[in-house]
Amino acid sequence: MEYLGQYKAVYKAKAGCEDILAKSQDGGIVTAMFAYALETGIIDGAIVAGPGDEAYKPEPMIATTVDELLAARGTKYSISPNMALIKEATRSYGLDKIGIVGTPCQIQALRKAQLYPIGLRDVPDKIALALGIFCMENFPYQGLFQMVEDHCATKIDNVTKMDIGKGKFSVYTERGVNSQIPLKVTHKYEQPGCHVCLDYVANMADISTGSVGTPDGWSTVFVRSAAGEAAFNKAVEAGWIIAESMDGVKPGLELVTKLATEKITKNQSYIEHRNHAEHAALKPLRNPYI
Image 1 (cartoon, rainbow, N blue to C red):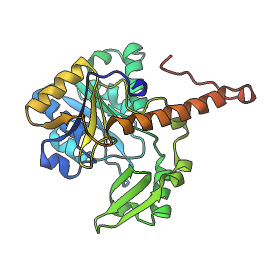
Image 2 (cartoon, rainbow, N blue to C red):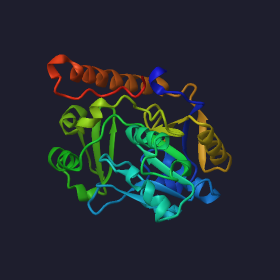
Image 3 (tube, rainbow, N blue to C red):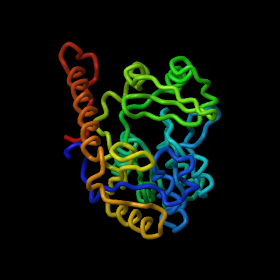
Image 4 (spheres, helix red, strand yellow):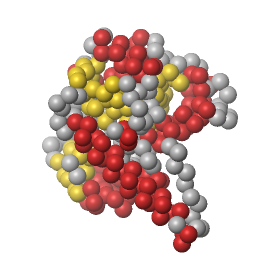
């Protein structure tokens, strides 16, 4: 369990609201958690990956209503620079209790900014709930565009959902078309920075979640901090989230651990390669867990 980080509890979970589940990626945990947190005052706004001017090109946005959260549902496989809005959330929006969702690298940046708030005066103590999402890799938008339009032979404007699972990248359209390509085809489009990331499950989030490990329509949820535990348990009690034990769930934590181990060992090898004397011109990258 070394690569799964510290956690207080792990669940098979999904949103308790059908409206949230309707267009969510899997169990709709991020949308449901932020919606509950907004409605109950745990947060007064959330930084999420909202829709951009181009299809599946996310833009960070500050959601202060449930409707705005619903508009941002679904996974985007191109990075949304959510950290860029932290200061904006406090200064322009006047938020005192901020929720933020991010990939493992973004959650690491968030925690570092809280420890060393250079240029972020009065911001660190306003982070009320940080939700992390499982991440193997991400794609620059142009690469994602080529994967969809060239390899899947589908106009990106017609795509209603993208998904990665069972060794394939899949796109779905309103007409029910499902185009798939093997993940080995997508590797050349990955963000180079993803190859030095040593976190698969957002170890530093209050709550982290992803579809791996649980059946379709559900998510695996790690509750990691006291703040995350309090918010999650209240959301379950209020019916916003349905949570069940992971005991006996297939493929369960075994698959989560397998993928986390694969990512981290592969990227550790890449980092060691960069550190080799033959590649001294490349700046070594620090392991954040040492």
